[in-house]
Image (tube, rainbow, N blue to C red):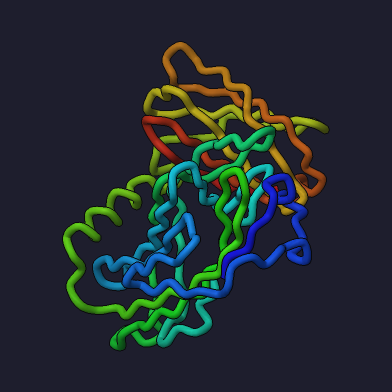
Amino acid sequence: MTQILPACYVIKALALSLILLVFPAGYALAQGIQLPHAPVRATLIPGGGNEIGLQVRLGPGWKFYWRTPGEGGVPAQFDWSGSQNLANAEVAWPAPRRIAIGQVELYGYTDEVVLPIRLLPAKPDEAVHVHLTLDYGVCKDICILRTDRLQHKAGGKPAPADLDLLAKWQARVPQPAMAAGLQLKAIKRLPDALIVTLQSRAPLVAPDLFVEAGTDSWFGRPDVWLSADGREAKFRLAASATDSVSQPLRLTLVDPALAAEMVLKP
């Protein structure tokens, strides 16, 4: 199903009742069928064992949202309920980047992204049959909400090209902070800002920081101060975070040299 909205309506408070239906329902299978009128193609690609990837290819200028979409956008929703022998599916998100659309800043990807997914079978000795209903949005001058239905049967030998592609994007998933040599030095919450100081074992080059908290929280683009040796970075983010004091903070550092994340308890 493809739906279309003016970009100005795609904000965090977007109500589904505002969606205008434009295109008829369609289905994208794992084989990679291109839907008519769609600037995006979503497919499932096989990996080794119970690893698969959600590959999203975008037309020129179109964007796909990160798990937290930024100032506007609709994060992807995964419904695995039609699957067989699937106890859980763990979706990993490669490091995003900031994308400006007019006065709105989104977090996400352009051109292509692959989300690595680990399938946990209910019965380890039996194959997993994946039936995924994927609700997601893509944006350019307009924003489109889509529902695609994707299928995959585990087993068989993946093509080397699929394994290489999945490994490439797996390498872009932020590591746990400790493994990446990143640690929190200080954090300060102000009524309208959050100040975070991080130390890195490896020198940072051009670090950015994405902060996630509760659904009512928002954190802007940070001002960044980097030490001369690149091993300490201080970030000040404008914040409108009505519930962040009681919610865990998830910090994702993105730098050309590394990507890492940590979760801070209230």
